[in-house]
Image (cartoon, rainbow, N blue to C red; front, side, top):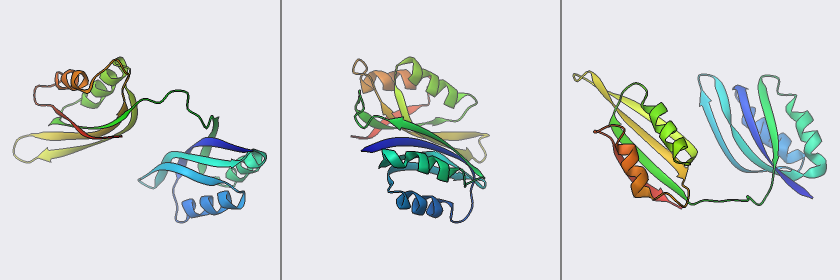
Length: 169
């Protein structure tokens, strides 16, 4: 019987780490279904979704201990999510200021919006003493919330902020 797991990974990055992990996973009969990995300043962090024979899961867990520079947290999951909401990609643009990311994520939490992915950048504007904030978010919204309502609430955080629906599933 196959089982699916979500694996959180974090630690020192080095050449060949991902290749070693995929080769050893395949040797145990495992298959990566999805991954979101980030490399930053010599470190790696991310999530993997993997399918493996249930009787090989303990061997997989033991194998991860060989990667002494990296920590793994492994969570068994159901292969049938009990609740799936429509996903949307949203872009937010505006004047940068302290606390903006925190305010955005708090507003999303207050509206029961599930944040799947959040990536932001700040661009300095030479000569103006300010900067531009841009974020791309992948979100799932509850059935009781429309995009227009969410857009209005996000844009109310700052008069210069603009919110765009850039893609949807």
